[in-house]
Amino acid sequence: MIDKSILEINDLSVKYGKEEPVVKNIKISINNKEIVGIVGESGSGKSTLLRAILGILPGGSSISSGNIIFKHKNLVESSKKEWREIRGNRIAIIFQDAGRYLTPILKIGDQFIETIRSHFNISKAAAYKKASDMLVKMRLPDPERIMNSYPFELSGGMKQRVGIAMAMTMEPDILLADEPTSSLDVTTQAQIVREMMELRDNFNTSIIIVTHNMGVAAYMCDKIGVMRQGELVEWGIKDQVINHPKSEYTRSLLSAVPELGGYNIEEREKSNT
Ligand SMILES: Nc1ncnc2c1ncn2[C@@H]1O[C@H](COP(=O)(O)OP(=O)(O)O)[C@@H](O)[C@H]1O
Ligand SMILES: [Mg+2]
Image 1 (tube, rainbow, N blue to C red):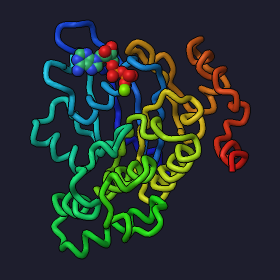
Image 2: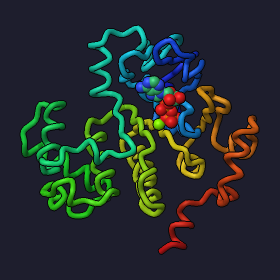
Image 3: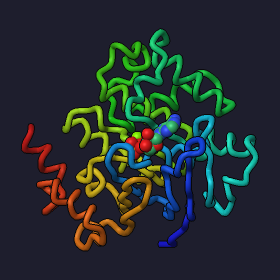
Image 4: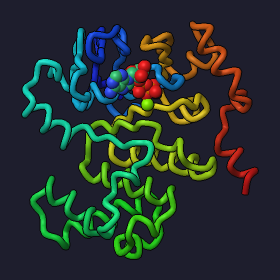
């Protein structure tokens, strides 16, 4: 297999206003089809890193050093227009509470079709088909019923699946996921994690998942980075990070995950059912 790098981040620092950077000299890379996990406690700079990659940092913040190379193009030096095109089409993001980004007064189908048609020049019928196919891929039974529902009629896990399905219909090269399962119960978390892995297999999507859960990262990721106070204190291939962590902090995170002997969310799930 060719190890094709799709995104490289070098020496990236981000600050809010005149404060010290909250993301400090980060260096990571991600290959085609790879799942990268960024783990760290609240406030360590994970969301800021993802927002920087997507070019959606809030006003007043700035990239104070570094490059974000997406397919040989430095996004930091790209025009706003170029970045917006990449953001809409090539890199997509899902948030912890994707349900919150659904419009409450519109049926899922209507907003889904509208989103698709703002990206692809296709008929409503074709967009409907694309949407319901993706809902099936996210293991939502009865897509017709989902398309006909208002957001409040769906559970948290279903809404999160709809959010991921919407992001995936853009057929992005990279899916950024900011704590996508944190607000869900353990069983639903495990299911969604597996569905994201299947999406990677089916669509060759690279995924960067931000999580404070080392167990989730250990289960689904090829590479793991650990952030602490804006710095990347650990970075490497999953097995290497789990079995031979370099930093004391990583070791403490690992020791807090009881099942990491065989990092096995699936078995935990089975024992729950
Ligand atoms: N809009 C903002 N303005 C000022 N400081 C911010 C803003 N957003 C985040 N921060 C600060 O940046 C640091 C990193 O935050 P964040 O990237 O949200 O961390 P995480 O996602 O790991 O919890 C924190 O100290 C936080 O207070
Ligand atoms: Mg965050």
